[in-house]
Length: 369
Image 1: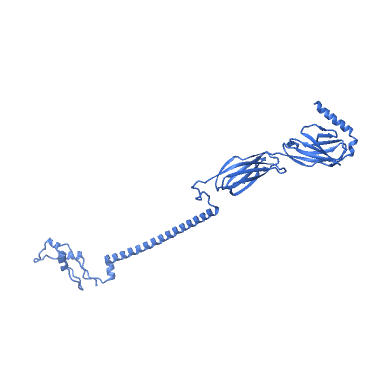
Image 2: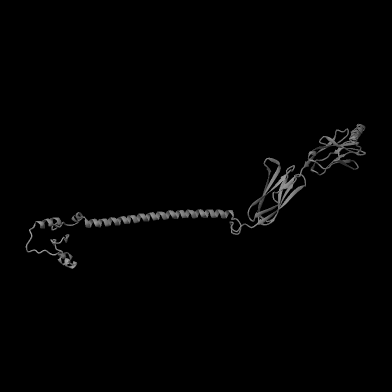
């Protein structure tokens, strides 16, 4: 504590002594902007004419380092100085060790009692971490897959790229901020691997030659034998479309054949029904022609020699029995068919009717003229 007060008093004494003498010197070239990585060193140079008495370095408006012609006055161990002399100028260098993120801001180099000063800006970047969920990935050969790389804690956000050490048929990647977290960026790699190898996610700082990388192994396995494609490879898009069109055409053809077959069956059934109905009509007409007497009368001449059975029976009943008539035995009814055929009259112009009184059997012949 006492040492710091001594430093402050020494600075005040030196400033009081150089109030008049320092006004005639000037800064030739001020410091330049510096971008430094967190934890590294940042260096600023200020060039001025000879004869100066006091140089002051300030960061974010606070004097962190002062130099006299005899020695530097150091108030913070993170700030040190170096000097370089030339024939016509003097170069003062301020070195900031272990740069932190809150060191970002303006840097000024000035001379005592001089309105001229040099200024620059210090930008501090932070290198975060990379993460891939699995260090050993197992995928199927020839099938598309994706790998995600997370970049966390980077200021500013890095540029992410991929390095592939394996055979692929396709690869592409894209990066985006994680929703709800502006300090986390994701990079997704899409690829179709054909063999084993490694994948490397690389994050680079925008203004520094600094980068961070993470490598994972990718193992490719053969697809199951029953997978589409026969040899374990999926069918291409054009083949799938061709198969779909072929199946559609086949389905349409089957439906058309079914419709045609149904139409043919219906037509054939109607034709068969029509033929069957015609045959039935013909058979009915034939039966009607044979059985209906009215049809005979209409189609031929009426036979006036025909007498009905009822009239003939009444006539026989009214006749007196004859003495010379002999009744025939009942066995007569069983005469052979040949004898019956002999007793049948031959066709003549007028019908001839023969009947047996004792037998109920009656034979009637009708000749149509």
